[in-house]
Amino acid sequence: GENVGLHLPTLSVQEGDNSIINCAYSNSASDYFIWYKQESGKGPQFIIDIRSNMDKRQGQRVTVLLNKTVKHLSLQIAATQPGDSAVYFCAENIGFAAGTASKLTFGTGTRLQVTL
Amino acid sequence: DTGVSQNPRHKITKRGQNVTFRCDPISEHNRLYWYRQTLGQGPEFLTYFQNEAQLEKSRLLSDRFSAERPKGSFSTLEIQRTEQGDSAMYLCASSLGEVATNEKLFFGSGTQLSVL
Image 1 (cartoon, each protein chain N blue to C red):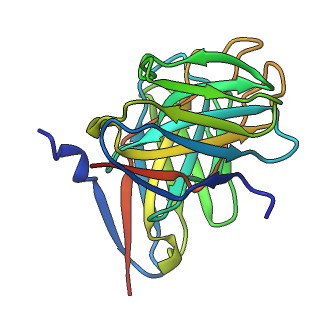
Image 2: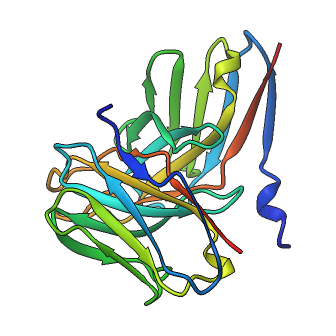
């Protein structure tokens, strides 16, 4: 229906716990993936990226896991903080070819709510 | 501030009016993208520029939409004869523009358009 898009999947976690946000991507030819964080009224903010020749990449408090067999991507946030509350999007680069731009396709997003 | 800058932040207009948005990318970035985002959804690709050349346009970009990047620096997105369905957040992003390389996109805070 018209309002389906308003009801984002929501993950509620307590401050200090670890968060895992999942994403199923659509195209087996995608070779580059990014997680973005979007706070209310702001544009998406880059968190971490991973190329298809890797299955894990770590950043500061964040880890991205890629399972190409089942086309699944996850974002793990360690010791979740109130400032992590936002909507998280995974994005994939579909059909990249030499000389073309990184044109990202975004998933629907997951809202992370951090409770005190 | 060396990030992507968009103006105005908010625009309210009446149906049938024309509107223009501006984007100033990160200064050394050659590629500039326009995305549209509606409530609860991920950003959707509209178009991108490599320097001043507009290289790809989405089917979402009807002929009422036009984008320019005249000197390869800032870009404008114009919507003519606005419709209520044009109400959305219009996001600009930029990237370095390295050839044959997946790149992360850096987004501005967007222009929120409301068509009454």
